[in-house]
Amino acid sequence: MEFKFSAKNLKKIEEILAKYPAKKPAVMPVLYLAQEQNGWISKEVMEEVANILNMHPEEVLGIVTFYTMYYQKPMGKFHIQVCTNVSCMLRGAYDIYDKVKDKLGIDNMEVTKDQLFSLEEVECMGSCGTAPMIAVNEDYYESLTKEKVLDIIKTLKKN
Amino acid sequence: MEKIVLPDIKKLHLLNVYVDNGGFKAIRKSLKQSPDDIIDQVKKSGLRGRGGAAFSAGLKWSFMPKTTDKPKYLCVNGDESEPGSFKDRQIFEYNPNQLIEGILITCYAIGAKVAYVYIRGEYHKWIKLLQKALDAAYEEGYVGEKMKKKYKTDFFCDIYIHKGAGAYICGEESSLMNSLEGKRGYPRVKPPFPAQFGLWGCPTTINNVETLTNVPAIINNGWEWFSKIGEPKHPGTILFGVSGHVNNPGVYELPSGTLLTDIIYNYAGGVPGNKKILCVIPGGSSMPPLRGDQLEGVKMDAESLKTVGSAIGTGGIMVMDEDTDLVKVLARITKFYHHESCGQCTPCREGTGWMVKILDRIIRGEGSIKDVDLLISVANNIEGNTICALGEAAAWPVKFMVQRFRDYFEKRVSKEVAIPVANKVHSMRHTVNPLADVTE
Image (tube, rainbow over all chains, first blue to last red; front, top):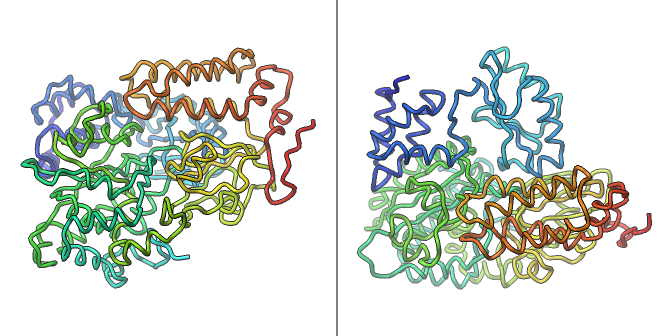
């Protein structure tokens, strides 16, 4: 599917470019903008980003595949990220991860049929003092229990 | 005890509250002195980097060339991805203006016109909080071109936030610079060091967020004041993040050299259920773990930890009680470094994967006694053979955990011993009788 930045985002790109002495350093923030607009990074998105920043599409692909926060397929409306690294693991993160998996019936990096939820087992999110935790899209939910996680999913479903 | 980085002042994150509490005095004071004087004071204060390597901040600044026709840059490392570290986010949230002032002073000292604060992508909320503080400071003329008028000076600099996208390796300084340049975050071969060849080939200094937040206090109160806090060889306060099996996990700002047992028992509230401690990682997951019976008298500063065979790292203290399955912990740590290996160097890319496989088969009960030495052998072949320190970060936990808990690992691969029995070997409760119960 064809991808073009919205007028609003094109203006934002101008602002981003002003921060750097060259165009290429803007690739990460511009990809974030594209992901925000398109939901994920498709081949067409990469071509358009490359076009705007005078890069090769393959260079942009190299960036997208290096960093875990650019999604190369559509994710759920609510992307649930469960940290299972040591500090969280010591406080029951795998119980929470399994609970979410069970509840949603999906595995790591899968999306529910209704496109509402997706799940990702993530590395340390810097929430070790408030472990265990999950993040839903950009928001952290900390100091969790299995029960609290189920409540969160329930509330998200309603919205 | 006075707190430098996270003082107990309500709403300090607001610009007017920060200014009312003496904010931006240090930059005014600095601008009346020469950049060399500032570098000299920071050097004499003994301030050491809080990002892991504990290198002298002033000395690092002095490596910047005095004469160059290229622009100079400051990079502020807020990537904070080391498991067990969650301190910089407290600064973004509770004291962003002191970080901003620290950045301004540093830029003046090294002659940089632009500073980039690289913050991990997952910190959406904290990026917004710092941006908000920056916007307010720009608006009032504390940062940017308006500085000239505000401080009546010729000097000004801009501060930009660059958002990472989920790669641990970008906390490594040369990888961070590559990432900022819009490339894959591959670490560079050093030398040349950033002061000679940094961002876009220009002289660059990279400091941790916590390091720079200390700078305004040093300028305000003098280097002698700072050098007398805590341990003389690693002075100042340190943000200790305590996580894992403690009653009150969280970040505690304490003088360097505070006893590890004091931090765990007095500040973090001890271990739930008054269980014994089996293992503590004192500085984030890449640092050598200590046994429960090694903790007595251990001081938390770079030099003291070196003498007991570990390192201060980022000050992220992970506590594990006597019921912890250490093989699973080590497997999880190793899985992390395998996942985060950038893939440039074969020993790290392949070795981390091999270690994960060996640990997984021990967990499945399919390990053999040979695996214990095999793990150490693979770790030794990674350490020192890679471009960046991720090699050491992956090798150290494996090597030191297996060495220090050798009998534990040997019992685990013998398959006959249950975890609680194996765990008894090195567990220790420090508030009561200090000797481990080795009998079964």
